[in-house]
Length: 348
Image (spheres, rainbow, N blue to C red):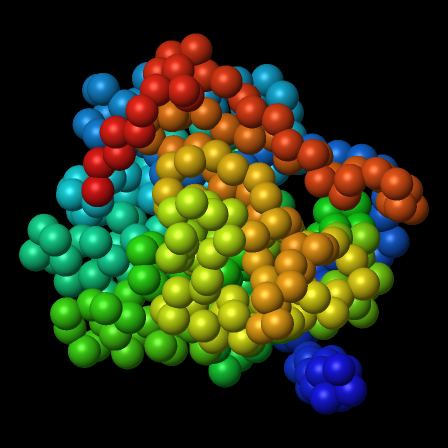
């Protein structure tokens, strides 16, 4: 425990020496300014739309209309904005960009495997598609959507991680939010090409640094909660009879097992991890420390996904009420989507 505190202190000191560029300073000051610690809601979704636009588009856009009616300050899309064998060209990216711009408020997106990594299934170069994705969706330090919010990208705060413009963070009403870029099912460490495997290792190092920085900033801001969002399901479940007791897959060891879990266990605030990938909405606390004990202040919420074209409202509770759950969750049911109790029929 003493070593952990010392490591956290050293990390905080290191981060404190990483100055923002002059043009970014107002953003940091605005994010760190005190805000009313009132309850608020945002929306999360992902793993949609899958299939040709003529078939999948109407239900997805109806869900966007439902989200717009709720008028959240922002919505998170945790990746896989198309299925894994769909076209990976610029026209498909432009279509999904238009879909993101249908959100009346801010839309924050983090990439999934279908969006670039699985383009190798079609013979495309996944690294070239990743570069195109970054250029289209992350060229500026702001979200997508009709009313974008200012965000801080990882290289804005940590220039040594220049490629990782998709790793974002921002603060809303005393809660720090951060995205980090993982892809299912194994984060790319099993890719057939050596260059793609090397990308996965470098991206994991960037993710670990960004997650550690998020915890340090949340402590500095005295945040009432930290919310992290990524695409991949990072757990594997050796015992099917115990679906809530998983182990971190080795592909996520740097970002999740060695960084997120120990920092969450030591955090003085609740932590929520939002992800997609498995297409099955669930809320639980499945993470455990090396001694096998549950990390009680770390929640995870997985969004719906194809064929369940639904979203989730996430509520951040009021500050200072120790008797209340810090997070609340309620589905946004889409009448144009199949009943969520139907058997899963997930395309790759």
